[in-house]
Each structure stands twice: as C-alpha cells, then as structure tokens.
Length: 250
Image (cartoon, rainbow, N blue to C red; front, side):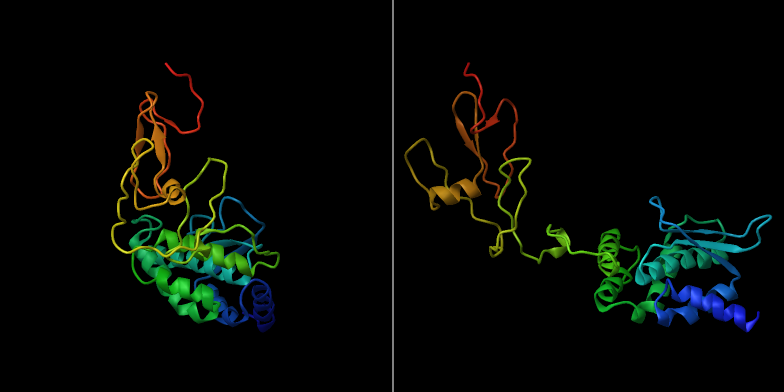
C-alpha cells in the first residue's frame, strides 16, 4: 500500500472522526480489508455492516456522513462490533445478541478516552453490564447531539434534564404542559388525608392543598368520591365524570 494512498485515506477519515482515533481506525480497516462508505443522511439508519459474499469478497461498512465526529465514531464502533461478531460466529446468532453486545462494549471501552467527559460517563454506565441498556443508549444519542455544529439548546424540559426527586403537580387538562415543582420528595409512604364529607368536617390539609393532593370525582347521583392516591389523574369511569364537566341530571 503506497504511503500517498495511506495519507490521503487518513486525511479523509480526519474529516469525520476525532483526530486521535484516525490511526487506530485506519489500522483496523486495513487489517480486515474493510470497504468504508460514507453516505448521505439516512433517516432509517445511521450505519450498517455487510459481510463478504459471492462477487464481493470484502467486509463493507457504511456510516452517515452528516454525524458529528463523536457520533460518527460511536456508530462506526457499532458496525465494527458486527464485523468482529461475524468473524467469530458467522450467521449463527442474532445481530444484536449478547455476543455482539460484549464486542461492542469492548470496543467502546477501548476508545472511551476519546469521547467528551459527559458522553464518557454515560458510556461507562452503558457498558457496565450485559445486556446493554436501551434507556442509557437513548441518553447517549441525545447527549451526542450537543456536539452537532447546528445544535441550539431547547427551551423544553426533558426527562434527562431533571434531577432525582423532581415532582410535578397533577395535570389539569390534556393540552396543558406539566412544569416541574421544586418540592422535597417525602420518604416512605405518603400519609392519607382525611376526607371531607359535604360542607362539614375537616382535614389536616387546607382547601388549596387538598385540591392538589386529592383529585376528586363527582358521581352522577351527587355522591363525591375522593381518590387518595397522590398526584393521581382525574379519570372517567363507570358513569363518573370530572367535576366541572357539564352533564344532564337524570
């Protein structure tokens, strides 16, 4: 292999990969005679791997070229893990079986120092055990988008932005957004407040707090029923309708 070809190939890789990953990735591709295809954006997939076959005796990997360098590297590692797994088991196992997951985790740990700290922390959690966590994988994808050149922080609050213990008030309507409330999370089982019967009686909570803690349902015959489950939703069930909903008295 001529040195000029090697230099040009590495310069091409440097456009899509972190600089520190270029040499090791090139050595892997050359060792396994991999044809690497960098494609346009594909909405159905980020990359794929094809094993050698009749008329095409080469390993073939494709990766979307619109990904940022860290995302490109992670997708490439995903496909390299498919290649390693095929060399070991051919087509005798499922594409994302535990054997593939083990190879993927091994490659991620090998390249872990090349990722930013926030992504690296998630990757460490992701590869800590097999089977790999789909939930953490989605968090990694979301975090990698922060390194896109056109990334702009969103004003919306996602679950990944919340800290443990964040609580929400109950929904007041299907179209209304829920906003987090800075309230301490109580320990143990929450206490059950006493019910109010009619206009008399009382409870340990004020009327304002009671509306937040006890979503109330009114039956068609006028009998009030109170759900004690905290932050429960007001539901329509067995002829019951939420208070404030108009209906004809029978």
